Image (tube, rainbow, N blue to C red; front, side, top):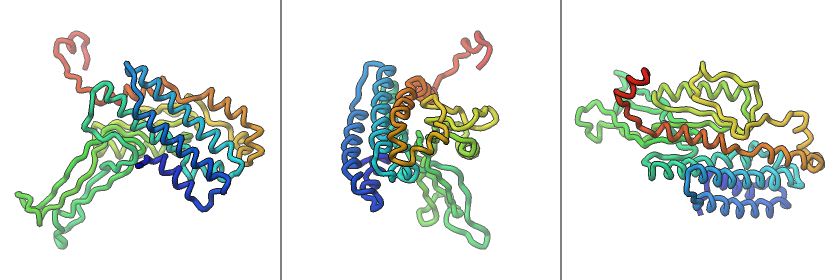
Length: 307
């Protein structure tokens, strides 16, 4: 079966020659749980959007707790915990969840959409022409830059350039890309450096597509809050409404004995700070508002005095 980005990371970890042999069976169990989780996400139904969000966020929290605690934290070996940043076992959960979640919610309100809702789709960033009078390349040497986004709602677009007005095939260059209209960068722990990088990315995106929306989503906050008003970031959402565990506490997690001693407190921390239904609802509302084509009525505008 075809698996998403998180499922592929589970498979890659299981096949890694560096994985301790005693963890192989645990990865095999995780893959089974992953397949069941995806099946539940795809098949979940609800009468209202509110109920749908609640059910899907519960599925996310249950599965993420299993990955964070039972698979990684409880491993008798230190490989999974120490290498989780490189293995991307934990931070790809939300990356795979968000497109499925968003698509289900959008379909609930608007029905099927022609947009592409996905993770890691290269979206248009900029265009330039690699040609000169001395080097007249076909189509002016039209070249585009694209960048993969953690989450995007985009539309496929076809670009054609030619020095010939009738676009003769041998004299034209055709490029297919995606225009990103809503994008989100996903971080587990948001620090100041990540914030600054996201600010630059948001600026570039809105130069390319002026009507684009850019959101920064994180699980935990690892910095003092900074206003987004001077940036092109539309909003930062802290999905678990919590700060990251202090570094002096995390230091003991690098060994199995340290993790076992701290297991109850870590379990409590995860359970007390689940993915927030409120934050997930807010994100979906942003998506729905971006897709709503609200026609302004002159009478209403004159009554309220602004538009």
